[in-house]
Image 1 (cartoon, rainbow, N blue to C red):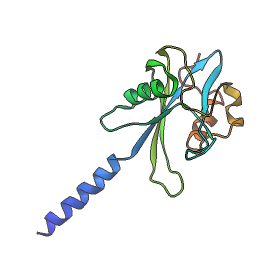
Image 2 (cartoon, one colour):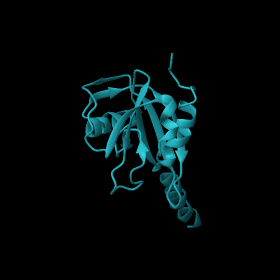
Image 3 (cartoon, one colour):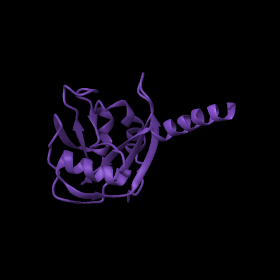
Image 4 (spheres, rainbow, N blue to C red):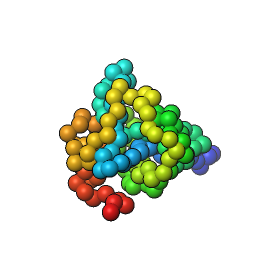
Length: 152
């Protein structure tokens, strides 16, 4: 029947919207500085700077993903904190992604560089001088200008 042919298409369209890749980013601050990492030369966006984090895997919440990613990338455990902001971003020729930024307020262990080409603690006001991945730049414009959620 004609109605039956329409339902699967609608269902697929709705499913594809829900399947948007989510990427988490962690903002770790210490003494007015923020931790950033430089991507490896062989990765996409080679040698660009980014905040630690990565893709949310199937069955994970963004909160679980940020904790897992920080353990994998920095060797810290039980990382947690509030969401700062989220927004969609689309790299040229790619599907849109949902970027979710978290302010990490607690974790166990000291951050160590386990995956980055370079890792630095950078004063907040200097973030814009680094060559960040394009998806992080809107966040840096807001965060670096002093409009920081949860700041004192």
